[in-house]
Amino acid sequence: MKHLFASSLIAAGLLAIPSMPATAQSIDIGPGGVRVDPRSPRERDRDDIRREDRREEFRDGRRDLLRREERLRREDDDED
Image (cartoon, rainbow, N blue to C red; front, side, top):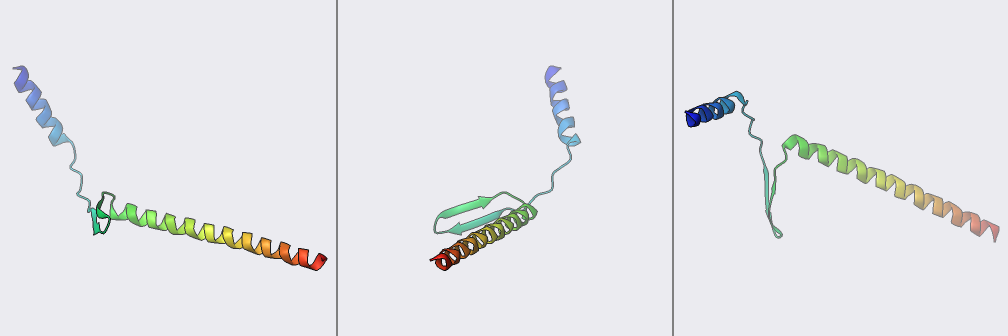
């Protein structure tokens, strides 16, 4: 009786859980071997956008630093 009760609870639980839609995976085969990316396409796009934003922030920061150094060099040259 216990086995019947336990198996009916498991069956009811499996039927009660809504099935998750299948998400596509990205599988890349390259010189480094096989790489599987289990993220959804939406998550991959979001990561690409974040990566590009960080890259632009780095470029802007680097550009500002170079301009500041150039300005300081010019001021030093003017003083001499």
